[in-house]
Amino acid sequence: MFRYDVAIIGAGPAGLICARNAARRGLSVALVDSHDRPGVKLSMAGGGRGNFTNRTLTEKHYLTDDPSVVRAVLRAFPCEWTLDLLRTLRLPFEERDFGQIFGLRPAAFLADRLAVQCDEAGVDFHLGHAATSFTPPSSSPAFGRGDDGKFFSFFAGREKITARHLVLAAGSSAWPASGASDAMAKLAAAWGHDTLPFSPVLVPFVMLGDWPLAGLEGISLNVRAGIARGGETFWPDPAGIRSLLFTHRGVSGPAALVASCWWKQGDALVLDFLPELPVLELLDEKAHGKLMARNMLSRYMPARLAEALCPEDLARKKCAEMGKKDRLRLAEALHAFSCRPSGTEGLKKAEAAAGGVKLSGLSRRLESRKVPGLHFCGEIVNVTGLLGGYNIHWALASGALVASDITEKSR
Image (cartoon, rainbow, N blue to C red; front, side, top):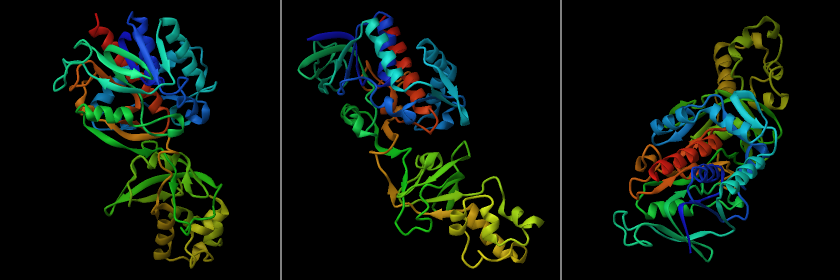
């Protein structure tokens, strides 16, 4: 039997930073993961390069049940904190569009170097074994006696592990190929926590085969994406304009992935294909007067897309010959194209998952209000970032916060 001050389930970025920081402050730490190496899911992030944080960090870039908790965490662990971490790990980075901070080395380097620092700090790794058969301390309300009445206990394979503090950092069920599952969220629910079922976000949309823009795969352009629900259209993306990519199954690219964070089955996806060029103004330009509408639009977007978007009876009309109603109809077709996805590509292709343990049941330092000594960090918590480095930043920041809280309670 192994006994520790802290046992952490999940060796992703949240678990690794939590384990490293707790061990560096003198606590004995066990880090448990069902995979045989740490950071498997992290190694896939950002196309393998890792989008680690963002210059524009605010609670508005997250979906959650308590934005005030997210705001407090981001104030304590801002973008510069993550940049300092990357510098200490000797991981070069660069800033790209929308404030995104990408590594210049494979994302796996972050996990590898954190794992090395965990090992140097004395963390015990229990990898390649799922954690099972959990028992909480007897001091937790509504539970019977745990191991010696003071410890959490569970098995990692055949090894029994006990710890004064337990951290669930096992993530969500997005990207099951990486070993991800909702097992720890189910454990949290069994121990009395309010949870929301995981649902895919940051995921491509699937369209019916006969949708109006079928056959345009490979085309990419900047758009503004919104959601139509209950007769109202809203444009939730704080960045406004992002790239959209047509695929053989529907649409992907940053604009679609971010829109998926708000989309629900039955909603329509609304696309503005000329977000910075009002069609009505283009029609008024003298240089466009003798051009057919389709040809005029082809100056500002791929010709195949222009032809698909332009109403058939307007395509060959000259701009100068179009009346007010026709102009408004063309503007709506370009600025408020509406389509109803049949679904998304699901958790297998999702970069993240919404849902998890609600913040309403946790302290502002992410300790359970139901089971003292139990903490949560990373994607298992109901905090989902938009595209742009927000989720990895949350994982690192929340893991560091939990390590700090446990250390203070262990003094």
